[in-house]
Length: 189
Image 1 (cartoon, one colour):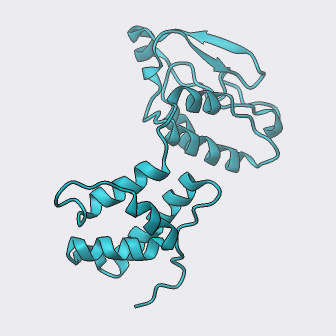
Image 2 (image 1 turned 30 degrees about the vertical axis):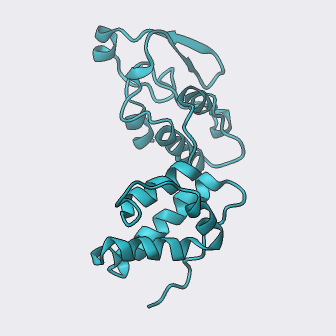
Image 3 (image 1 turned 135 degrees about the horizontal axis):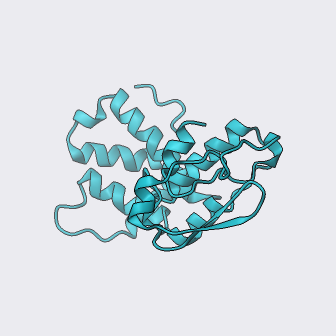
């Protein structure tokens, strides 16, 4: 069985990102090797073995109820809870809406915005922000918007807040929307 490229989880640095990438690789490996068709105790053993020595120490600190130790989803969730802290959605959304394009290309910037939107759990729209959202335009000005139902139904997305593209890619501070779909705007850029 070929396992080259599936290194133990690095628990130094950004453990949240490290965990997310590692578990994604492990699940690809599990599918490719048909590990997912094996009994759960084998899946758990493979997970622990592939995680590495440092994670065995973490595993030993977990508390399990009867019958949980050999449940792959429960074991994975315990590691997820350990490595991925609870999100502060307010701060996460602040970071999203205050994003500015640096020296990266527009494509890189949009990819970064998409990832931030996903991290902020924005979903397919931003109507869950409640009353009085502030949107940052490319020119740096704030626009107050309300989240009334009528306005939400009638609002049209504006690609760059004022409906006009900025004169230069370097001038893009944040792609904004009046009251319409964040995700649709990101997908159409």
